[in-house]
Every structure is written in C-alpha cells, then in structure tokens.
Length: 72
Figure 1 (cartoon, rainbow, N blue to C red):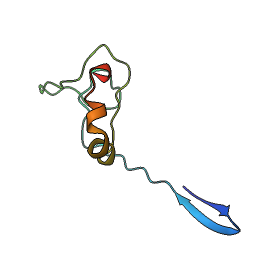
Figure 2 (cartoon, rainbow, N blue to C red):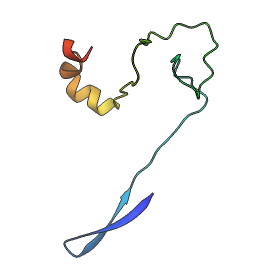
Figure 3 (cartoon, helix red, strand yellow):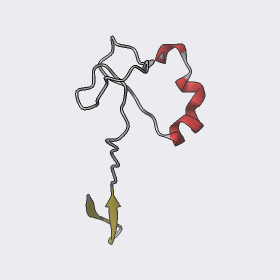
C-alpha cells in the first residue's frame, strides 16, 4: 500500500511491503493453510496458538533478549 503523509509541509510516501511465499510450509500442525503431510518433524510446540517470527535485524540486534528463559 502507498500513502502520502505530510511532514513539515512536505509529502512523504509511506510504503509497506508484504512478501508471502506459498511454496514453503511452516510445518505447524495448527496451520490450516500449509500442507503438513510430510514426515519432517517441525520442532514447533503443539500447545501454543501463536508463533513470533522476528526479522533478521531484530535477531542480530536483540539476540540476548530473545534467549531469555522467560521467552522460551
């Protein structure tokens, strides 16, 4: 989507991009969109309802926070 926002009298574009791949399975048994019939174990817990997928910038800059036991 593209929007224009005026900042200090100037119009600045805001661009949000979303890339979805349908050729890679998430391997979650909870997922209704993926084909999870393969025999590969997912390593994902089955008793959760959501998964957080941080981008590489978050992982590189905040790895020590992501490794806290409270977030496991």
